[in-house]
Image (cartoon, rainbow, N blue to C red; front, side, top):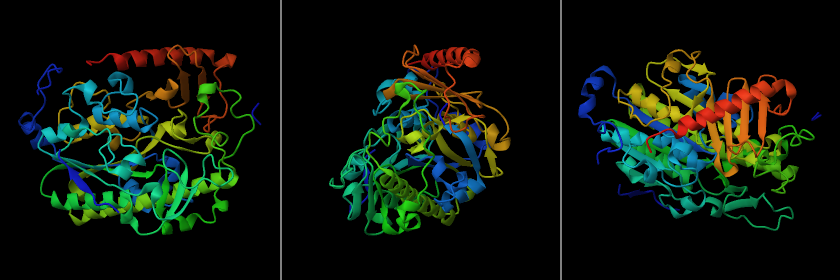
Length: 487
């Protein structure tokens, strides 16, 4: 029993694979008369756990701007990504395909596999919308891609215009410390996918997210008289945990940061593949460094929240609140010491779950506990705007939940961790995790009602074998249906 760069613009066939031609503005003239031509403002954070947001219950990290959006929209408590790291998740939600359908399990652009099929923003562009992204929507390396100001794995066909937001990242002037694999404290601040905290000199616009907010505000104002689909990609709180100094003050001294409980023998009943790729042990982070990591993460979240506030104020100043759908989410979740795990990749709820807020003009605020997927955003928003959803899209229209938050669209949701060959099938009660398609890498089963923190793996318990067999068969059927596509 387990007792300084400027933001700069980049220049931005018939669907022969479809059973019909691509939809165009002329095709939906009738629908446009019946449906408002909403603008779409899609805001996506990077590596954000819902547990760090005050509207999701965090009492330490205050996020007043995201909270205000949540209070005026529908906040989803059981939203899941389809890939537990940046590349496959972003390719999925933008292309409309599950990762195993498109084959994009890493960090590439999905265009090679999807051919001429429309991505989410491309559908709107093809219907006369101004479609633009600022910073990271498809995959973009952080910190490397942000330092260089490149396009990463972006898809040019998806945009009318695109803009990047270079920033100094871990090289920012200020006080930096490498927390990971630096037990003697001799390693300077370093780049890469490494836990580094930088209390930075200067103001918000020294950094990428401040530049992103500024450009997004400019675009809202300059395109206020035409329909737009605007993707705003903030890179915080992705490592390095860098933000202007004032954002760190509420979390000092770091010694006051609380860590999740550490349960003796927590890993004893899970397969090796279930132990996350970053842990307190292999990162050599003692308790001081762990607490500072949490404080640095929260400071990055607070900084990102302030940038969200600027964008939302620009929408209000342009008098566009009443005709703009606003979505806020993240590409996946993040561990902050739960189970002694850190970062993403894992298929536990902290990593596979995401914050999701959708605000549609005229819809009453609500909290929805129904299961939803990020893949659902494409068909839902297209439908709300009166655009026909392309036949290839594998997500579901969840707009009914905006009127009736107690309705059910999914009886389960599906996520993958390709680098672990892992699969998650999540029902309201059960979380079933399987490593390798033949389960040879092991299985995890958690009763999330009795054990919401997922401490006890029930996969080998005799009384739960019927549940294991049922979910294993359901997962196999799901994966087969995902692959049964037109690619």
